[in-house]
Image (cartoon, rainbow, N blue to C red; front, side, top):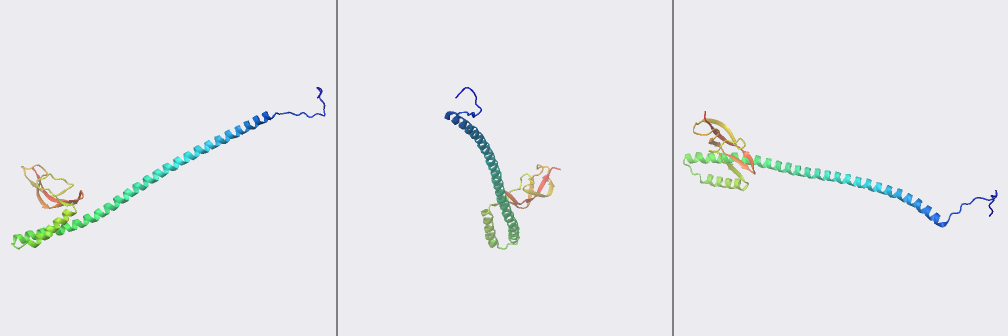
Amino acid sequence: MSTKKNSDEIPVNVISENEIEINDSSEELESSQTSDEKLLKLLDLEKQKASEYEEKLKYALADFQNLNKKTQSDIENGVNAKVDEFIFDFLKIYDDFIRAKEVFSENKINVDGLNSILKNMDSLLKKYQVIPIDALGEVFDPNFHEAISIITDIDLDDNTITKEIRKGYISQKRVIRPTLVEISKKR
């Protein structure tokens, strides 16, 4: 080759194999960095979606558990209401038997049969945890008692129950029927 430039010559840029490898790997590195960045961004998006779905699932599970508890509570309340209604009606019959026993006793009629029926009724009430409300001498409580008359007695504190007119009953910590009472007032 001469130092003179001929117009016939085509300038050729000679690149060694090492230079080709470096150029290729730098292009690969740039493209891999961009694909790695894309993958990381996609991974972050998928993690965010998974987190959102997990939160939605937690809320759905909590809603289901709340609905389940409410349904159980509604069923229990419905059953308890029907049981309370039945016991309330039963107590009316029970009271009638007690009044009949008292009338027969006053007229000196044998009440052994009524006593055995009342004994069976008492054991039935006890079996189902229906207990009478003790009121006589207690302080009036509107949650358990219903005052239907008031007497004046300066010897007793206000709102002391002086007379039980009709027995009240509790079942499963619920008042089935309040006790009808007479209460005292000082003036």
